[in-house]
Amino acid sequence: MKRLLIATALAGLMAGPALADGMDNAVGNTVRVIVNDAGNGFDAYFDADGAYSDSLGRSGAGWTASGNELCINPPDGAMNEDGSPAQSNCGPWNPDLAVGDSWQTDGWGDGTITITILEGRGHDAPTPPSQ
Image 1 (cartoon, helix red, strand yellow):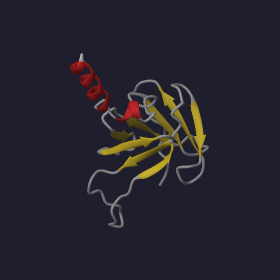
Image 2 (image 1 turned 180 degrees about the vertical axis):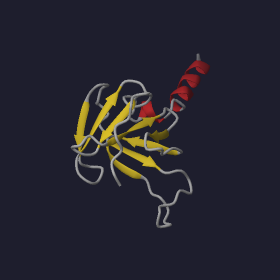
Image 3 (image 1 turned 45 degrees about the vertical axis):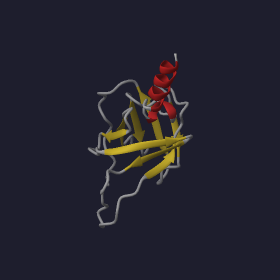
Image 4 (image 1 turned 135 degrees about the vertical axis):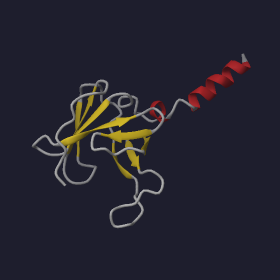
C-alpha cells in the first residue's frame, strides 16, 4: 500500500505542467489567437510535456503557467533580431475556457486579442498578421 501511495504521488508530479497549472483546456487542442478585426492570427499548440509550437512556424519553445498567467518561454540561447537574449512572453490565461468558447483580453500587448479553444488539432490556421 505504501508503494502504491508513493507511485501515485510520483505520477502526479510527473504528469506535466498542464494538469497542475490550469492548461488542461489547451493541451492537445488548438488555441486560436485572433489579433485584429480582419480575423488575422495564428494557432498555438501546447503539449503536456511543456512544449509549445504554433502555425507561424515557431517551435522549440516551452510554456509555463501559474494561476491565471501563461508564459511562452523561448528555447535556451534564443536571440532577438537585435542580438539581445530572447525573454519569456507572459500574459493572462483563462483556465476556465472550455472547448468551443472564446475569450477576449488586452493583456498580451498591442490591443485586444480573441482566444478560442478548438477541439483537437489539424484545423486550417487563420491568415497570419502582417509584420
